[in-house]
Image 1 (cartoon, protein in one colour):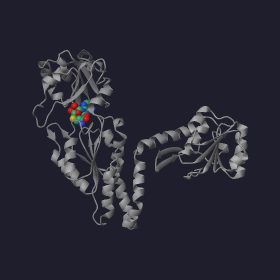
Image 2 (tube, protein in one colour):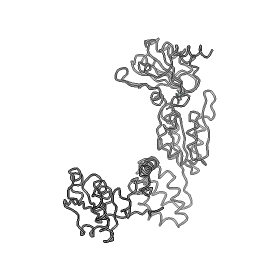
Image 3 (cartoon, protein in one colour):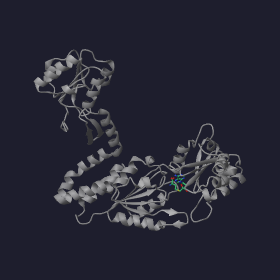
Image 4 (tube, helix red, strand yellow):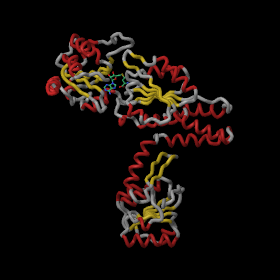
Length: 467
Ligand code: SAH
């Protein structure tokens, strides 16, 4: 470390910017954000700078003078010619004022870091001028890591600092804050539910120190398989979980991203082989949360699309457990993107319908097939592989044209994705010929013709080549 990082309070303090162009404007903006009293001095001030800073900074159109520098707490030199920059840097040094000269590290007393700004929470990144592009990339990484409401969370905690100090002695206070930041109150603040957060916080602060312990359950969508399709929020939750309950459809690559010492339970269900009954999953989540744990219930795709997320949320609500839902990329949109077919398309389809091929128990879903067949739009069938032939027959019997394009997308977004396409009339054969056995969706409608996939003819040719 060559430069020492510190946070400087600039509120109402005089800052001088020498220069009138875009670099000067950028520096002025930077310190205006911290409430500085900015004077910008240059023989010529660009119109853009003038417009952008009107009413915000003092604009002085003349060459700088020593008195300008002596009056400042900090000086930025932007866009002076090299000799001028040296002269003003020297003047600042004599006046004992800290100086920064744009693109002249040898003249700088200080540099400005890359900043992640979330209100009360800020992160400053510096590479000591060695690699500004690396600093910018790190900044992007950190931006992605920090929840957007982290500043609100810090402000919330700040508001209760005194109250917590009064309510707890020093070791208990630390434990309180530790539990706070990984618990339900912080989760509520991050989710934007301030009313609930305040209510619970007041309760927590007023409760006797002996009994306080409820965890939280996050029902989280993991997307269709590709770990890059996780939301930033899902990733953060996976890394803060004490316990993860996951389904069969959640890929191993995604589980690798979870906090290493989180407990994991596989509660998935392969068809007909129910690993853990639904009621038991719900009971387990509730029990874990009551132990004070942060529980992540990780589900394939989106929890609210054929994911039983609704049932689980109901059970948690009924048990009085704080619960939050994080959406995920659902199989239909994930597969559509990776197979290159638009689910709606101004030329071919003005609506899209998601249906399940599999209902509660083993009965047929009570779908209005006539209505589905009549809709001249895109139909996406989840859990329909086993019944694809029967589904196609019904749609055709109810009037949908057998020549309507159809596609089957298996293991969508994963390395082993397979796409076969043909017509509705061929749907059963597409599945047999494509040896589809993994999770797959059926896409029926004109847009299916746009998929990047193999046709029955392609498959036959490949078989012949192999044979
Ligand atoms: N909640 C999930 C759906 C769960 S139902 C979601 O929003 O995606 C399970 C069905 O989803 C599977 O039978 C299959 O139809 C579909 N599915 C899930 N992942 C898939 C994938 N990677 N590729 C194709 N279909 C998938």
